[in-house]
Length: 260
Image 1: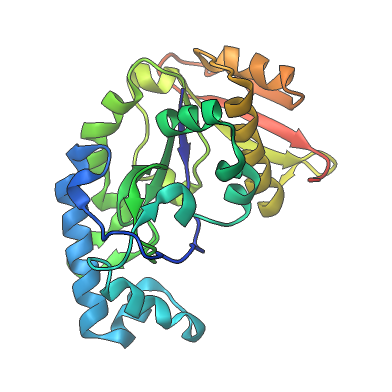
Image 2 (image 1 turned 60 degrees about the horizontal axis):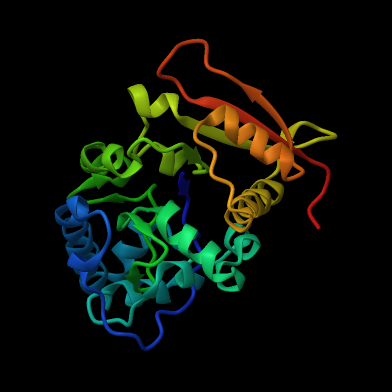
């Protein structure tokens, strides 16, 4: 199973680890694109703080993120699973997984990023600020920029596995599974059962809990139909809609009353 996750806007500090080595990151086919985004982001943030803050969509209170970006090549790096924080990652709680579940997480989780394209939770990266919605002056909109590199790398990363797509719309735009891979893909919405509406907190926390449940149970569904059964066995209320045509993703709705 390959699980596609969004990043978090908030991130832990980089810490005192060794600096980033872009060539050491997973999915080496993305290295050239990563270097291009990294070069422009660092240059922008080092040269003009006000312009960088405008491009990145940062408030006055987040001015310090610009200086942090300017030092990305020399900042300490930590595993991405420690860098990303927020509701989804709090619910996932990678640090508390048992060793077997951590190994499954290292193999199956892929976090999408405006800066890195996509990284595994074991990849060492510095803390940064650059969402997929950013439009850099040189490279343009990052969602569009990443489409070609992703199209060349992600199908191979998926292999013949089930793809569980938990990304938000901005990050989903960077790579849309096609053909046979799409037929093995399941997208998930989390709905507040009484209102049948998407609520941000319910959505993020439940997605984190779903991933944790799958990792800790050792469940290994081979396709969307098996995923539905696995989630129901784990206690989730799931409504599934198989695609009308071959080569299209499944749509899953997970219904929740409240988050404990």
